[in-house]
Image (cartoon, rainbow, N blue to C red; front, side, top):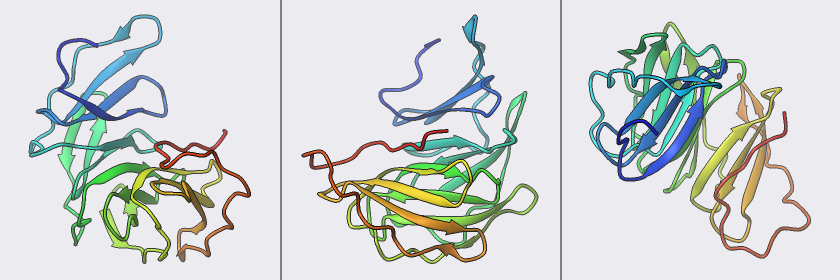
Length: 204
């Protein structure tokens, strides 16, 4: 890693072209981004976002077109992003998440942002548009039986999944841009004998 990023890193993401990388952390500037090249590694760090973040960031994700970057805190933050790095910050969502975000993901269709938090209702989603920014909050599904630690869309964008604390470990829901969360899928028939799940991913 070139230079000091922070004390602890909490989230990391490549853009869809695999030529930029971002890290969310608990030390100033709280989110750091670099060009990336598979043969030479990290390039020169991009300038910090403006306005600057105040406080730790726990999740980060690039939009599918790599023209925006979402950062998860108690408030969802989104900045424009391009080959020069961070651009203009979008207006915040109408309401705070109420607790720290642990992961944030853009939908494959680039029209929604999925978030999990460590406080109820644990599961959140917002409409998203590159021009208009963060839109209306979807109704949380009423599941979320434990603090959210990670979340993901499948490649088709019609299913979302959450890694959570507690015996359930994982919850999955159908997803539709217009309707939001569907009825929760049945829990998997068997799970590891562990108390918490910390990460989740679909195959591509």
